[in-house]
Image (cartoon, rainbow, N blue to C red):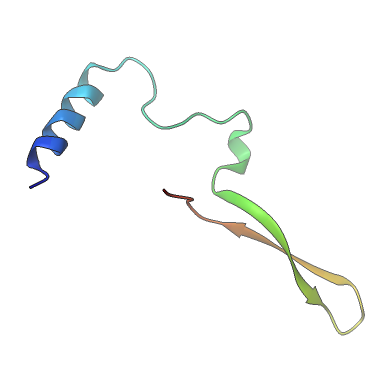
Length: 57
C-alpha cells in the first residue's frame, strides 16, 4: 500500500541538493521539546525537567 509513497520519497531525496530534515536555528536543541516543572525536591528547590523527543503530527 505504501510502496508508491516510499518510491516517490526516495526519488525526491535522491535529487535534493539540500538537507532533507528540518534545519533549526539552534541545532544544539535538536530533540528538545519543552521544560516542565516536576514538583520540588525535599530541600524545596524546584525540580525542572527537560523533555526530549520528537513531536509528530
